[in-house]
Image (spheres, helix red, strand yellow):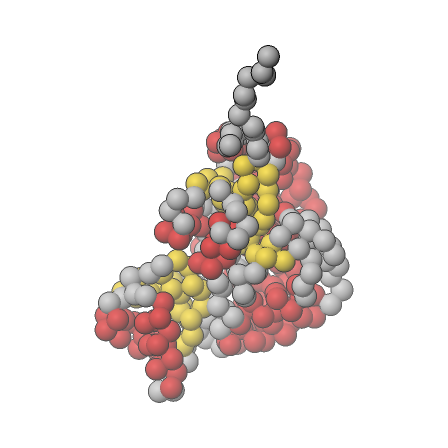
Length: 328
């Protein structure tokens, strides 16, 4: 007698993504305050030399705009969200899923590497603190700004930016976020000129409230300072794949992460291509955003509309992840 056929249950391949600076908000740690994972704030406070609970619960929004504080806060919330997701079994075998890769947007790359097992929590926190200070100092030393060009194709943006640089303006592409969304950075005058010419390529410029021209040559002093902080940092030789910002390639420990991190400060964030790597070559069928806000989810839906994306802003969202996937 033949045995009845039953569907084979396979784990759903998922990718974890972590947001960057700009997603911070006042009291962003409140959703995690009563979870067991909150105890990690003590270790992070010691590593950063900063009161992380104070930063996450009571620091005013205006103060959180400061680059070093914003980066520490966003990183800490991402770490808490990931730790609680793991503790509750909301990602992994208990939830019928398998984490196959991680990626983070700019600052989020540090949380991604931590989640992937490439960096210890104390080491990662110390690096984030050093990175935030270095970027703030670089911005104070050379005034710059950023804006996002909406609706124009990347090739048209790159051509306009190149033309303005040939004319002597200091402008660069900083983040390639999604189709029709490219962030640029440079001098105040350069970004003003780019904004004035944006309609010529069918684009609209939205100025960003940031403290500097990040991911541009203006951050070269920060890259030099970060190199010093990275000298004695130990990276795991093997870890889950992490898709790097600088080239959208997945690495499992077989790369020079210090070089990637320093290069990242002065190079464009290849986020659109990174999502393509996660959902294409690495086969992720669900992407889980861990950290404050839903910025990455919005970008991912524009890049890969057929891929499920879940944003985890608090413990209640973890229930959405505990879904067993069945496929032939």
